[in-house]
Image (cartoon, one colour):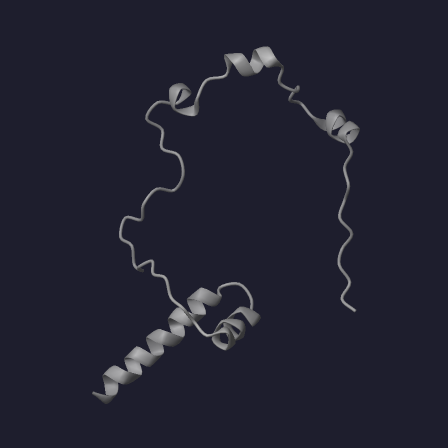
Length: 95
């Protein structure tokens, strides 16, 4: 049987004891401004890649293939890409 670490449970009083930020009141919320208004021109998020190296596609795979790659953990999409690249290179060599 696999053992998992116990999750820490924090109470509201624990959070109040360590919090430096007071809870917002209705008047605080009424005075709040949108991000773009406070920081005009500042980009949010990562934005587009400068030179995208891959294309986003929708692909249907058999459940056996999907389970095989997902079973080895995170990065399964990259492993599928590596496997397909090897197959393409092998096919190009035989032509």
